[in-house]
Length: 265
Image (cartoon, rainbow, N blue to C red; front, side, top):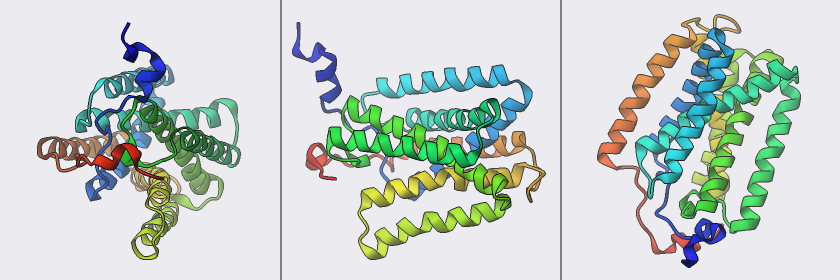
């Protein structure tokens, strides 16, 4: 039997980095997936909750199966996984609220605690939370767990401000845009740790993108009432175009660096 057949050894073996470089197009795609996930989840849920649940669960399982099977970062596979995490994360947060009747004021800190726990276990296991170090199966599993939890947290936080606090969609979008800018400016001007800045901004993209999507799609809380289906379709067209662009140009592929395996937190 070869040594690499042991599951724990396979989890720690180095891989090519499985996530994209952090560029402007990364943040654009991230915001698109958050808004698209919100609109798609609501659109399907309004028509059939069982079908929406099946699409969310099976789609997420397929997307992550494909992502974990790929030996390196591939734009179409990676962003398909992010899109399905967005859809499922929305369903999970909304399902707890609607199905169990637990308010967003409870689920928001609950999901925040889950995110914090994932980051704690990830750091204690690997010694880094850097997106540039996603080069083992174990780190990849931590990464996608964190991504899913941040989507659920962002959904709950966005709905908390828009509905429970009665800010409406556009005021919520403005609020989260300001919050998003804080770690960006902190990294740019005040030497904020880039890993802290990245994850702080990453978490906020979810309520920011969802607030904009709801602002265009919903007829209440100041929304324009375009409809979830229309907003989903528009976002999907732009999303496919951008993913096709990065897949062909490979502009977001991380450069291979010798220090990837030992990068400090």
